[in-house]
Image 1 (cartoon, rainbow, N blue to C red):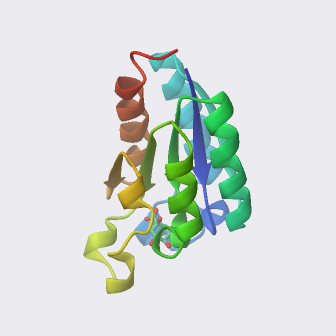
Image 2 (image 1 turned 180 degrees about the vertical axis):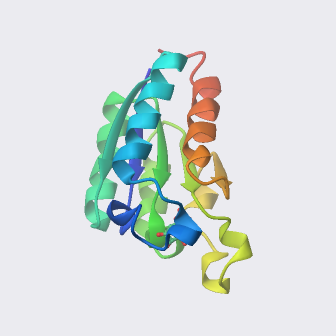
Length: 146
Ligand code: DQA
């Protein structure tokens, strides 16, 4: 199976962005880890990042045509984007919402996710391991597809 690992706004700055909250690994580190972990699961992992909401919407639709699942850290668009909610509903593949930090232990405005009701599930609070856990979940979900 092919899995898209998508990252939204400001995640390009991982490593130097609030490392006390998001950890010291760069996005390149995390993407490499996802590709490697995907190999151990027999998944082909395709990684993309954009600061632009529409890119993420376009990639949802592309994934709907060529992939079997999506792991997405939508960053702040998690809390605002009806477009991503609608895109998740418009495609026939499972979406797993990912966060490095435990958004529920942070500011009130991070407690609400627009995406979560359209996602298969949410993983948050485990740092870079959140992505690994999302890939494990997607592996199970795609067991019966190709
Ligand atoms: C985040 C949490 C969001 O609230 C925030 O806007 C981010 C990162 C996380 O991975 O913990 O950009 O998605």
